[in-house]
Each structure stands twice: as structure tokens, then as C-alpha cells.
Length: 131
Image (cartoon, rainbow, N blue to C red; front, side, top):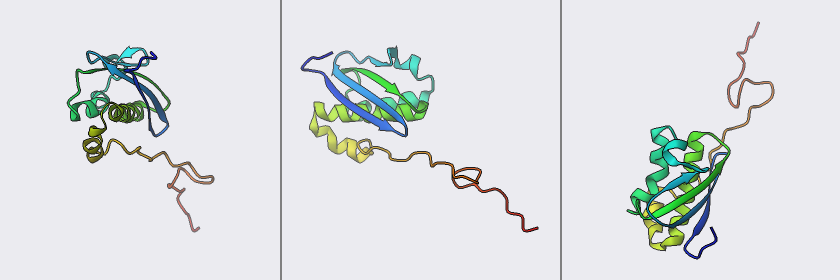
């Protein structure tokens, strides 16, 4: 894939990491060697993935190839969105202001809080009994 018209970016969300390549084409989105509709069965994941393209009006202009691993469906969709966003303003720096306003540039830092010892979960405690 080493061509001068190929743009590479990495997107992250929770524990998912998406390596994203963008090149001018006819609008195919391939995720882990499968078409996006086949890889993401959930409609919201498909919508999350294509948000930056819709916002910048570049829906049919780029072929996107993504290698994503880690996390679940929503985390992976968020990572792909972040990767596409990063690659888009390598293509055109003018996209930055509208993508920033939509909140796609910043990596969402929220992760699952770890479960503490002697407790049910991160915040949940076992019921206290005085007697």
C-alpha cells in the first residue's frame, strides 16, 4: 500500500486500536478484510464509523482500509472513527475546525475502572451488616 496518495493514521478508543489507511477511490470501507456492513452488524456502529466522512462531505471519495483489534463493537467503531478523522486532516487541514467542533479529534480517554479487592466492582461494595 506504500503510495504517495495513501494517508495513514491510528485511532484509539477504550482498549481498541484501529490502524487506518485512506486513499482516493470510490468509497469502499474495508475493516479487517471484510466490508464494513459485514464486519459491523449493529447499525449504530456503522453510523459512528461514517460520521467524519458525512461531516466533511467526502462520502464517496476515499477507499478506507482499517485493521482494528481489541475492545468490543462500540469501542472498535469509535477507534475507527478516530482513525478516519486523523487521516482526513492529513488530506485537508481545513477539515480540522469542523471535525474539532463535532468532537471527533480528541481521543475519548474513558476506560473501564478496575475492580478493587474486597469489593464487588469498581465502586460497588458488599452490603454492610452492623450485627
